[in-house]
Image (spheres, rainbow, N blue to C red):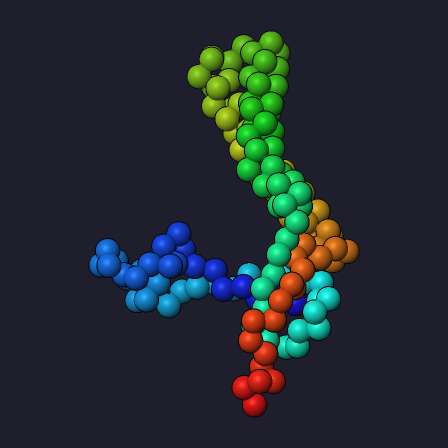
Length: 139
């Protein structure tokens, strides 16, 4: 298990802009992931981790691109079905179609979360490639 400290888009900022977002709030969340450990890192070691580009590309596609197609498909299907089978005014059909699109996106992300949780239990997405600083060297 590795923990990676995440910051914001300006996490490398020297606070010259005056915002001091991270400095003032101290909010940097931790991302945790199971990691393959071929280098034999121990708990507390600072390490370098890598992930395969293919895995990240598939995850990016799944999280960012596919929901757009799901929403567009749900909207189109709902719009054409409601237009053909109901006597609703067009504004009601459009509003209902938007609701169907949002419902499908919510269902998509729910299914995606379950899928990724199962995948994470079976596979590691990152590999520890190097020990930067060993906790044993500090003792």
